[in-house]
Amino acid sequence: MSDVLTLNLETEPSLTNFKVRVLLVDDQLIIVEAVRRMLASEEDIEFHFTTDAREALASAMTLQPTVILQDLVMPEVDGFELIRRFRAEEALARVPIIVLSAREDPKLKAHGFAVGANDYLVKLPDRLELLARVRYHSNAHINLLQRDQAFRFLRESQQKLAAANVELQKLAALDALTGIANRRRFDENLVLEWQRGQREKTPLSLLMVDVDFFKHYNDQYGHPAGDLALKKVAAVLTENLKRPADLVARYGGEEFAIILPETDGAGAMAVARACLRHVEQLQIENAQAVPYGVLTVSIGVHTMVPGKQASWHELLDAADRALYSAKANGRNGVVHGA
Image (cartoon, rainbow, N blue to C red):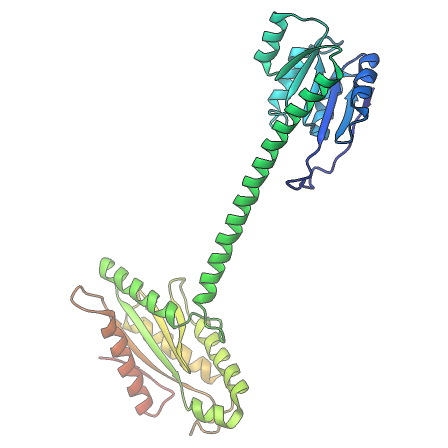
């Protein structure tokens, strides 16, 4: 016979609503009734019981009591063995167990404590003493639960904060308009790739890309159209990157930059020509782009094997000069710096 409350264990109690919950395991209904009466007038105490020791473990797992009152002598199950079973379950390992025994026997007490009991009472105990011990052990257990929950909430908050910081760092490194890397991310990445190239003695290529006649395009078609054009150009440049380490960034205004680690001059020129061709194939009308009539870009390329005596500024300056040459040569073209 049992009276077991079914709880939704997926619903986490708050730090303040833990309640004293007693589970009595005793095969004698007279004892059950006597304990029930002792606790009945206490509004802060929930009382549950089972008279079948074989059901005790399942009942405790369902109830998650704050204290277990348990007889030692019951049919089918040895009381000491039942205590061991409670302690073997992670969810019940710390739940206080008060042994209710018909005998005041030091050996029984010692053995009960040895297998995991927290207290020992000779039944039937005085009502005030029972209430005091139930509340004492329950409050201690509730304090543990509250502490664990507080630590869990703290860990979750820290994890959420760390995740939020990662997202903020990502956002801080992105251009708000195009969604690609911004100038800050470009500067950091160029330094890192330059240092890696120095260590590994591998070529590093840089492409500087400028949208031709963009000021005229903005004046004629409006800033919303200009913003959309920049987004499309950024998408085309991104689509032409082949490896995870490659990076395209908005360098400023209508200018973009592409970092190609471990890429020689021939490989960089191939990427540049593909970008040039695909931007022109967007067929974005630009009446000022004579003689092409569509939006185009000019690209300056430079490749270096980073040396100890050189600086990444040299790579940037050389790619910039190549871009200037591409624009001076009539735009919609690619120039590889010497």
